[in-house]
Image (cartoon, rainbow, N blue to C red; front, side, top):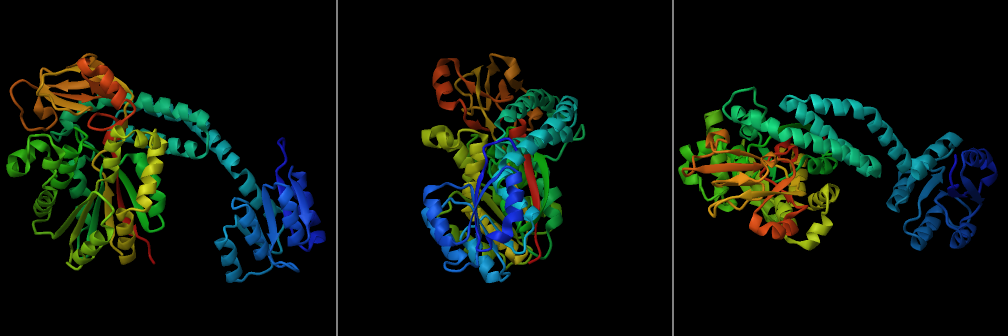
Length: 522
């Protein structure tokens, strides 16, 4: 093993019996010091640094747990493995409670000890090497799969695998290969936009074998779960696939999870995609069937003010009966107790659907563009994932889901759309009546300076939008572009470059997770 020898301190009153173990470790390149009692070990630790301490629990004088307490007091980050003859649960629980790295019960073989030592001291580098080897082996086929992608399933499969590789390589510290993954993601985005817009107008007309879209989520995913037991329908607004993957490990111990995906409708923005989920209808259908619930202002607050009745109407159309719905839109966790209390009360009604919309991820994404502090904290995709997980661990959403699992209730969890890390400006020309969105715009005489950066149509039916004024155009950004006006070019670049935005056409915004969560047996 060609490296600076890792230093191990073994504290055990039966040092003489451990010679085979010590020799075995030394032969594999570790420097090992053996000490027969806790007092001498503590004295040695004051002047010497060790990468790992193997500590016997049952020794004359100070017991191992007492020595462990002093070691942790002197160095809270010291890595310790307890070695003992005791198989009592109490001893093991005490040791684990004091944050030992592992626990071995005598008699142990040299191979068992080496396994534990290797995992603790070399685990990260081994995982890094394995991740790099696995990706290098997979890369040629993955690149070919991207080039050959022709269907919605093909593009989703490549995108999902690239997300998983990005997360795995980032976790392994393999920064060198992240650039390769990101390069493949860029290639996928470049192909994705024109491919989608060649097919999307036919998808929304029910032609060309469309994938599962926002309008299909309730009929295909929620309705099969309905019965006499309550069902939770949870929407985490503006959640990317990689953000879902970051919170998945928190839910796996509670639920058996069946993952899938759907394509968000366009524009990939809350007024359109989330209304499509709750209504099962495209925007033009909502405006025609329920004009009182459709505000043409393109304002999120007014356009999404009627999600509860839209869901009730959709369930009535699909089931031909009145399904009870309890709906909550949660913007803050400050009133978590009240939310949980109302949910518990609603659960008393047979067959009710508990529909919960959590807006934190969307608020964080929007707020990041306005806050230099938040921009620094969530400076890239990996940081945004970490921030999402930190929020979720302490959120009302997580507490509600834990309670649902404990009561045996099934959950359908999804999002309306994702977001894209925007790095490049696209100059657009528009009249004063154009909407203000940075990834999509509606207005008269709209055009992009570079037509390759955006999709342009003057046909509202191509997007299933209500007919606009005469001469209305619709412009949606491709890839990682965001729209800027020529008169405000520098201002917009400074303010919005590297923001996470949504409304346009990219895998990150359109290919979003949907999962059925079934509580694990208690």
